[in-house]
Image 1 (cartoon, helix red, strand yellow):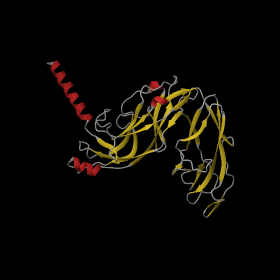
Image 2: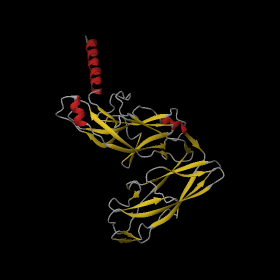
Image 3: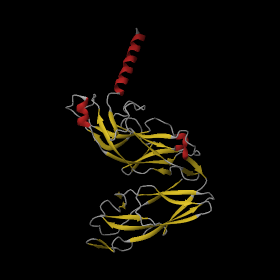
Image 4: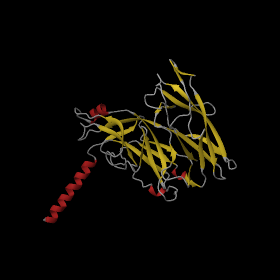
Length: 340
């Protein structure tokens, strides 16, 4: 009798677990109905000497117009925040010596920081509203549907003190869009919620080659001096100063270098702000006078085997975005280098 009671309790517990797994769910796809987006990373070289934690690859900024709604379930009255849930397929990439990250609204979350457990993902800030008056699935679709455009980047960094290993798998699901209660249907994604995938991971290889980067004029400060404010902006208009990236290759092999001008204070595609309320920005132009997007990767230099030094010229300009603040200012931009 005691054994029969124990078995009955176990069966009830298992049934409750199955019910709770599907107790609440969100459908979240791209607005065009697609359930995935894949980016091919291309060739990536990782110098043996770069410190642990160094970013070795960065995607462009992707903007996904999403289409999300709640299902008619026991939580139909509740608001449902949209989350990025990391590594939804549960793949262990640790032995590869790399780690994947999400850059969202200027903040980077790494695989070790976020997960596919409910509410432990990255909150997008967008919400599918609860529908207290709904009486059917059709009511829920009409009431809770939300179509935000969600912009993000994905980065890869060197992770682990062991030598870099060629990934044993060529693809990796970085995240899945889903709601408050976690992955809809589990890691198998039976309802086809949107996932972002990287492909070409087996192109990541180690290299003994390194390139030292120096910002000139040293010590990497572009000084605009004293600038006059006018009723229309600045005098002279768009004050500019040159600077260069001096690249010194430390090997006899051919290698290509990319860069990203990284800043935490960005407005639009091209403006680096000293402060949020400065009402002016700093723009960077290349040698052809083309504006360079901030926080976006771009090709920097191609080193032939027999070339060890390249200077890449740029210029920085001030641009009025309103009524500029008067007084000393400082803006910080980091040059992030990748090898490919």
